[in-house]
Each structure stands twice: as structure tokens, then as C-alpha cells.
Image (spheres, rainbow, N blue to C red):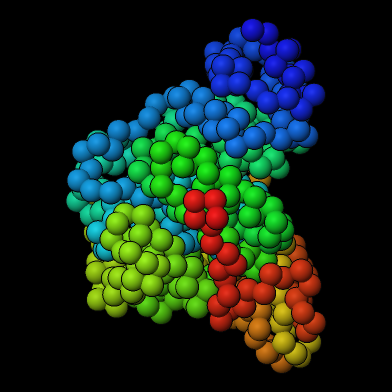
Length: 443
Ligand code: URA
């Protein structure tokens, strides 16, 4: 077999076999096929696409390029959640303990933030002492002790994805639905979870900007999961406006605790409970989304979910006492306010632009090796749908230093849309309608 023939066949729109795809992935990981040939093949895939079967073959080859985590000692059904990434998306943090309180075992492996989107690990790292690099034995032990554990992916999980992603990043081939599917699914399947719920974001702050693309990605994720023997379901959810009332690493831990206590914002609460409902169904703990949601609501109202969260913090080395003492107080000393320039109703706050301002403040990063600031963040006092008077505070912004504040404030002012219909907003308001569509088994 020769790489050039496989590239040519894909360039001409032909369907590749499992052996051809396996040959390319093995050659890429072993260094037998040069980057320029892999890049040319990625571009051919970008333009010609892949069938569902080719995508499943690619995912399977990438998955077997590294280690597969062994969760066989977990005494029950395992379900993880994956979000395609957004601004203010802290949902994994309250979701895992809520699902755990319902009897689901949640082996959660998350990533760091990059570009305008945040990452769960950066948020967890803001809890003093909390360990986000757990050895395998600790990961499994903590799941058994409190129902869930949260860690970063090791270098050994799907190494092919790291090589391919780095090439996609510099060759303009990131935005390909089969390549995104194989990238996400290979990592998630390598984590050993039995089932998966996807939160596929849609809107200006998401990878998928249109409902049609979000639906294609959601269907491909669910179908590829099925081909790998994993039960999956996906919710397509709005990402035009930042989620919740806070963005920032420690601030999002605070908002997660609010959700766990039943006093979170409407949109983040709704999304968390609906995802928990699907996790309950996939684990066989509920026979309908309604029943799954009821169990999730009960886990919150009884205080069990919050108890499990605090137990997890302690098991992962976090300082729970300091966390509770810091709640509502821990803020960067460098602060600015963004006030309403007009009176009227806010129709949208552009999530993508908020994410970019977040990088300036120090919430996020543009390069994988950059540090983030745990205490940087934005508190939204008004969101889409809120009526404001000229001069009202709309946002408080906290920065990593004093010199970033003026630039970030100017960027944040431009994120606010007054009146009108919110431009291209998918209709997500702070009162709800965050869930746009559900895809289960490709339907
Ligand atoms: N997230 C991933 O893990 N991979 C992609 O290709 C895109 C988003």
C-alpha cells in the first residue's frame, strides 16, 4: 500500500477501506508517513468528506493508536458527557455529581480551554489543591467512592488525534465534520465509558455555527458511537450568548455550586438537568427523559448532589473549607465595569466576542502552553432579554492585571446588542429555550 494512492483515491471522491485508513493512521503515529502526505489527505477529506463507515473506521484506528482505559472494576453503568465547547460552559462540574447522586458512574475526562472556549480542567484547577492529573488507580477508586472523578486525558489516550489535530490546526482542516467526529469519539471511546451524552453547541460561540451543521455533527457522533458499541444521545444546544451569569475559572466553580444548590441561572440549570436526564436514561436509571429529570431534580433538592461534589473535592485533594470560604469573595483585584450605553432591552450578548475578551482578561489562552488566571472572569448583571437603563451595570470584568482592563472593556462593550431580534441568535434567552433539538440513534 502507498500513501499517495490513498490520497489520490480520496481526492477523487472514492470511499476508503478499513485497511487503507488503518495504514495511514499507523504510518502517521509511527512516523512512516510524512506530515505533508497526511496533510494532503486531511485536505482531501475536508473537501470530499467521509461516509459513516469510513468515519467509524477512522475513529477505530485512532482509538487503537493508544491505550484504552480499563473501567471494568466499576460496579455499574458508566456514562460520560462531552460538550463541543462554548463560553461559560461549566455544565460538567454540576452535572457529574448530579448524575452520580442518581446512581450513574461518571468517568469524566476533560480538556483545557483553547481560543475563545473555556475548559473544565482550567476551572477545576482554580480549586486550591484539586488534582486534575489522576493516576489510573486513583481515578477508578474515586469513581467507586463518590460516583465520579474528573481528570485530564493522558498522553497515552488516542495519540493519533494529537498528531492529526496539530496538522489540522495549521492546514485549515479543523472544520470537517468526519474529522471532528473521529477526533472526539476516538478520545471518548478510549476513556472506556460505556455510554455518552453529547452537548453539541450551535451558534456564533460554537464550532458549529448553523443548526444544519450542528445536526450533522450530532448525528455522526451518535452513529459512530453506535458503530463502536456505545449507547449515545445528543442534545443540540444554543451557544449564541454566554451560558449562565458567570464566565471565568473560579467564578464558574461558584456558579456550578449555585446550580447544585438549586439556585443557578435558568439556562445553565435547565441544560444541566436535561443532560442529567439523558445520562440517567443511558445508565438504565430512568425510562424516559421526564423520569430522568425528576431524579436529577431530586438529587439537587435533597442536597445529595452538593454533598457528593464536596466529597469529590476532598477525594481529589481540594481544600473544601477554603472553597466554601472563597465563594462569593475570591475575585481579582483588577476590576472594571461595563455600563449600558442606551436604555432598552438587550437582545443578545455575542458569545464569541465575549470569549475573545476573556482571553485578554486571562480567563482563556490562545496557545496550549499559556497560563490562565483563576481569578479573572466576567459577571453578567444583565443578559439577553433584560431591560436596562442607560448607565446600569451590565458586566463586571476581572482581569489578570491592570493593563488588560481597558482593551477588554472596549471589546465587551461591543458584544452587547440592544433591541432588535438579537441578530443571528438561535433564540436562547436567560429564561430558557436552550435546548434546540435532540438526536438519539441518528434520529
Ligand atoms: N474537539 C475535539 O476534540 N476535536 C475536534 O476536532 C474538534 C473539537
